[in-house]
Length: 253
Image (cartoon, rainbow, N blue to C red):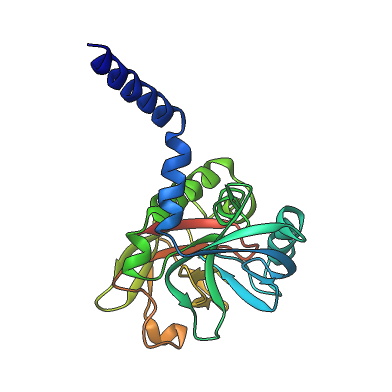
């Protein structure tokens, strides 16, 4: 009887310790199955690239404005405020290096996902170019982060105040033909000069002097972007912006 009570006590203590330390054990298990490194951020190159030691790190899940584009300095300054000179954890994706031999990683500081925060605050848009990345645990969280950013109406998520922003919409996107169609649903003409259409990555088309008359449409294909393809079969997003970079329309598939 005493022996039975002893083992019941041992099991009870074990269960209590397990419950108390579940998060720690879960985190330990995840880390044991995840490829990651730690290091000090020595330099911020731009809004989605940093230097840790002697290695360049391309941040995963995001795409920030390039130098010369609106939002470039804000995205870079965000990373400088948050992680410059600090120790971060780099969690690698399905591919560890890109074609430029930069390491590819989601960046965490003190358990905060810096890449996700960049999306939520409108410093970058989501960027998941492969089937594997869109099936990862990060995709849904980042998509929700972008949707929350839209509601917050800040940074890259700030809505266009152009009078035609409520008129011109993407009416169709055909992955097979690589055609995206913009339609003016209003009865009056709209100037879309210097408006742009962009994917999650760097593929971008900028309209020159164009007036889209009422109830008409304009069709763009990959050749307009001077690319073999723009919209990936594995999934992508489109972003339509006005001449001041205000967000007119966006969608994902």
